[in-house]
Image (tube, rainbow over all chains, first blue to last red; front, side, top):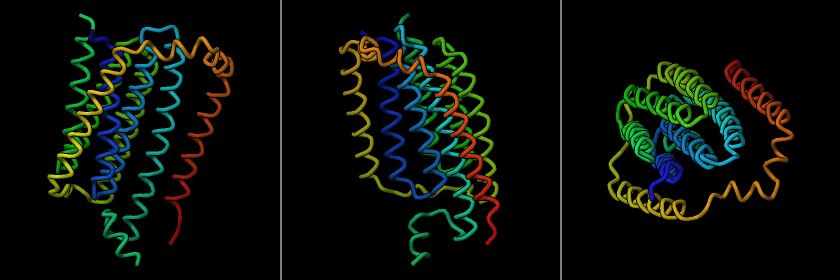
Amino acid sequence: MITDQSVFITTAAVLVFLGVFAMSYSRNLLKTIISFQVVVFGANLGLFASGLGTSSSMMANTLVLFSIVVGGSVEAVGLALIVLVHKKYGTLDPWKIRRLRN
Amino acid sequence: MTGEIALLLSAALLVTVISALLSRSMSITLIMMFYASLVLGVIFTIYQGILVGLLHIVTFAGAVSVMLLTVVLMTGQTDLDIGKRPLALLLGTVTILVVAAASYSLFSTVPNGVQQAQSMNILSFVWTYRPWDLLILVIIFAGAMTAVVNLLSKEE
């Protein structure tokens, strides 16, 4: 039987793996940050879905709140680092950056 | 009716995210991520998580989208080279399909895990100390903002 909870948890799992795959596949640091955002979306949806239809939905909401703040903060720091890297190396390709460092 | 709205919203979320990740244009990626944030916020709001939904929309569709746009404009990365690696794409697609099938079969049969955890009184313990949780959130946010200011104000 299809329930809301199973649909959302499946979507969350797909989002997390999609984000991790895109993170390892991308050759641009901006795309990596966007992939990280997809992973955070998956984690948020999974946490939220775990409390659907139960008496512990408020706890799930609290965990999602925590996850949103942590995800947003990490993303802000990552974007600041990207600006610095671009200023220093002139590119956002991790392979080129590695070559320029050596 | 149960599950249809969830299926529709999940499909919308997946379509926006996949098109954001596969797009070669940065502007389309940003627009699609904006829509994905909105869809996720709507999911939270519809399923009784109004505060979380609004916070999600404000944070990701608002602040993070603007930050991403600013960084794109600063760095001038408008076109993305996503490369041509068909084997990796095929492998990723197969992995994601297996994950979807496995997680669906797992979570549609096993009884709710959170309810089991609550019987062990863990969640009520965490709930008692909720003000500390909010304090930690404030500290994390302040730390992140300090790090951003420090990074961006560094002289070469």
